[in-house]
Structures are given as C-alpha cells and as structure tokens.
Length: 234
Image (cartoon, rainbow, N blue to C red; front, top):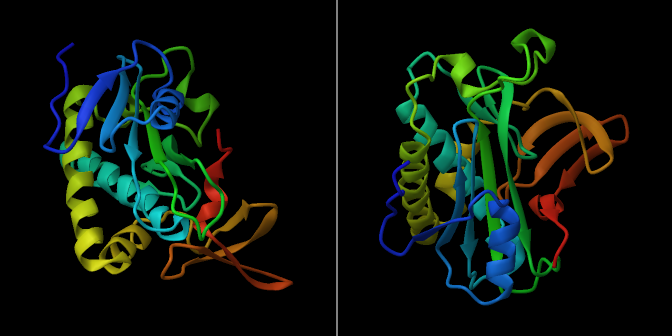
C-alpha cells in the first residue's frame, strides 16, 4: 500500500497497527509539531488523527473538531459515487446513507475552556468492510463497501481529507467560525431528532455560533458546549 502524501505544513506517520488517536495524544504530550497526522490504513478500516498546537483558548480551539469533520465529509463526498449521502452527528458519528460508518473524536491536555491548550488532537475512523457481520444484523451501522464505494482507495481518502481539512483550517483562521458553522450545521444528521448527550435527552435544535448543541426537552432548552465531547486528558 502506497505511503500517503500530505500538503505542506502537514506530515504523516504510520502507526503500524496501533491506534492513531492514542499515538497522536502521546506524540503531542511529548512535544511533536502541530500538523502531524498519525494513520493506520487497512482494507477493513481507516483510522487517522491530527495534532494541533492551538494559540487560542480551548473554547475556540475545539472548532477543529467540526473543521476536521467537514473536511472528512467533503473528501468522502468528492470520492464516493454521487448517490452516496454523507452526514454528521453533533456528537461525532459519521453517517453514510443514514447509517453509522465511523466517527470523529477529540482530546486535549486541558478541560478548562479559558485555557490555551498545549495540544489538541482530533481523530477519526471509517469502516470500509465488515466481513464478519451480515449487513442486516445491524441496520444502523454500515461500511463503505456496502454503500457502493467498492472502488474507494483508503490512502486517496486520507490524502483528500488532509487537503480539504487544510482548506477549512485556513478559512477558519481567516474568517472565524461562520463559514465552518454554516457548512457543518448543514450536514448534521441529528437536527430535529431525539438524542441523548451528556446525560440529557431531548430534541436537537441545532448548534449555536460556538458549535454548542441546543437541546430542548420538558425542562427547557439547554446549551451543551462542544468541549463536552473532549475525551479524558492525559
């Protein structure tokens, strides 16, 4: 399998079977440069994670999750057949033709929204093949090859994600949250649906200007900040 090629300011490192998200967190804690992409590419699954070195408080830096998610949707949308629908859930899942096919996650070295993180990592995965399962057994889960993406090359997708993500990083740097927010909210699959997030269940109304989830239930409308999705710090 060919080694992926990444845009300037990004570099890559294969994890040789290890979890790229965990490897990226370890590399970030050890002081690697921002823009490092850790990846593990197999015929069944593509996993990747990118290290950021933010210069803004965590509450703003977590915009990199929707930035990377939009980059992934754009890359998959460009390479997959036109009839394949790719959408996102606020809390991270990536959906292909309505069924879950992977997800996006993030971690940082702080949970204080007002603190500038030493590092922030966004990771993602997509399932290409589920040979061990019959498709009908898990109707809310799918794989790319089951959805008409049999010709999709994982390495080409990884490279395309890096390019699309860099475009959105630059737009966010130049224009702030607005263009990312407009693109991301237009792709959210769970808007208008009943969801459970951070122990609260209700109707997902959309996201505020800082990407926080607006959740409505009998007790009122609640704002769940994007920082809620951060996984435990190291």
